[in-house]
Length: 149
Length: 451
Image: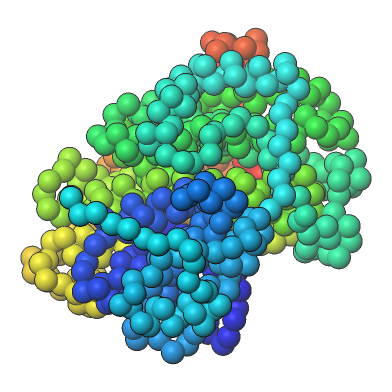
């Protein structure tokens, strides 16, 4: 648990954060999807409860970042940290919550033996691309492919 | 993260496996279906984990800053006595909860939720194993005359009714109990584990991190089904109504509050560096978390009942309903509430007070019992536990006993002969109140929270 600035706290995710994450997702996407987040958060709490983080501003959850260390994905045998989903309450942007959560998550990944961190970003999301670039992420040799069924 | 894995000496390991065959017969079924329900998760292992590289200095109390103890024999006897009681109580709760969960596990309506609980039971078995490992690995002769095998036998022979804490002596009546127990009683467990993570006894502190990781999912295994049930109840789609959920909360929350120990206590544990918080402080934090849980469940219910609500709109609507207004047909009594801290208590400061679920008070036992009939699950009211509570309450109200005596008098199943985990040689025993008072003064008695 880290106090990073006055009123801002980064801490591991817990099961009582579901409602706040549903609300942040709704504020970003316009969709109310509690079932999705209940299942997804259960997954991360089961797999690696210390890896996924939330950012609190004045005691209220204002951002979340979910991820874990995995091995054997896409032929990457070494332990690799994966940042899989993140969200920051639009009303709380500009407080570097994403950066603070990423720093906490990367530090945790290091303690888990990961030497690299990966993520996938929609090329049309300039804001997310800029965010990860600012953290030192760079394009990797893996290209995503999709076939619609 | 550097974790050391170890197992109990073979005879003790075998004893746990035999216990598992009796009380967790679905264990092999869980492992056979592990990949289906928990794909890519590490395979479950029945072993003890110790996290290495943790803080080596005592983190609170009189000896703060001194090196942590590696052996019980390095501690003063009173300190070791407290620690020993905590380990034994922790072991009792872990095995005890499995015995409770198994009664109603098969009644789950959803396979996913059933497997969540089954996984949780296996992990509780590992937690109990972890505590036995602490009892076996060290020499506790300064505080107990029992051999290691006697200590293990003692814990493994406990059953619902003979465990050290009240919450683990109450039978489950339906799968609702499995779920609400996880959301409330495992939450107390999380507090105990988090506090013990700073224990001045290093093997205890090192045992906590993996247990806490597993406990995080146990809480989700309670909270997520409760959220789903609240949604289904709002849509009128289910058999688990808000009233059923409320009564289950009323049944378990008082026992959870008592697991922290007497509200006036806990200072000794802090002084000895075994826990960072006194009982009342930890209990208050726990209660606040339950308030958040219940508010979230109510919001989930409202969103399902009232179409087109936004998040902010649902918060506002909830506040209006809680203030007594009817909003889109939703009344205050349709929602859940957190029972008052003094409600239905048998230990601690509010023991045997006539305080209702919403903080109201009653003048007579008869009126209070009518209230309990309305607020507690019917199946639970038919239990021995409830009958004993009523007898204690009546004795206190008639002045035949003090609340402390009545608390000590709550009957417990005791082993009267034999040691086999499946032994039938247990009887309901009631302690003489005078003897209980004397024992309480000397140390934790059976049924008394340790801490």
